[in-house]
Image 1 (cartoon, rainbow, N blue to C red):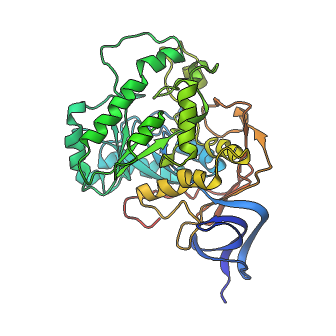
Image 2 (cartoon, rainbow, N blue to C red):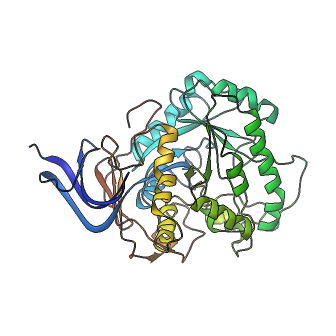
Image 3 (cartoon, one colour):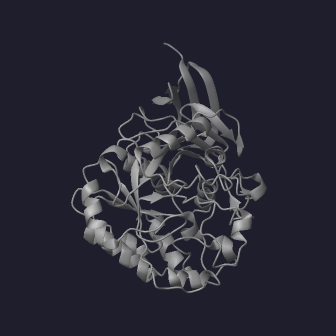
Length: 426
């Protein structure tokens, strides 16, 4: 028998549950799963530790082009890889906006030279979007119902028309679902003010508007949902999925975070956060996405009203959740469905699960190996985290496409990230 390229041994999370096995890999794909695989050019023995599918993060802002003082594809992808994420989908609010086919091609060209992880590009959806041509290159449309960092909002009255135009495009539409009163000129002084101005009522109004406007056949993905009742509302709506973020699950407006906790949508009250966590732990949402949106320390230290919304998260998302798995606060299968399997399915890539024919994107985890998060050990260019000192479990080993990329938070592999497009075999 011809030797396989690589074999990874350990307790793997398979479709039937956790199983001690060997995972055979050839040409970047999982080709065989068996109790014993004898021949391989490279062997990785992680007996006694967990092997999980690496993360698929459908919501990052790597700030390139145009804002590389905050982040770029090199530092952002290093953060992703060290945190156990194998694929990222980059959002369009860069400078220039990712709006046209040439904008998409340029971003793919830039990222292909820098990225340690596989990636895709989301394209801005508004009244001017070339649906037919952008959908051949981008893996999702991104539509903004509320103003946020670096971008305005669409006219809510055009929502049904836009979604009707996208329903045959073959890619989903991701929606930032907030309604904001354009006449509200409140000067925000703290997280409670931010929560009041971008309220739960306005978020609910936006979510209902999306559900009412969505025509049959249009695939819609609601981003950064902050309320359990929105997840419950969309349960019976086919072709509508929802994301929650780590910060809305773990942080609330009453914590002493200052501008570092300023995010869109805002952090909510503790009771709202706990209800969201309960829904998440039951698997009520579809995906967990980081909404990695870094700004420099200097920008975040401006007066509250002037400080930009956003925080770095791609490197800490999975480690924070793994600590909660170790604490028995969430089942590992629920977590992996949300952070890997379901997001991969939404954008149509063969990632997010340990199965023959899928990309060999794996992380190895020791649930007894707890460390504290320190900003000076993270890879994001912005240099800070809202989780300084929090306990987390970082992957001991990260493999992407059959290649070792990271060990214990250190990048050990070469840049191997591929730019994926709709319909391409991942």
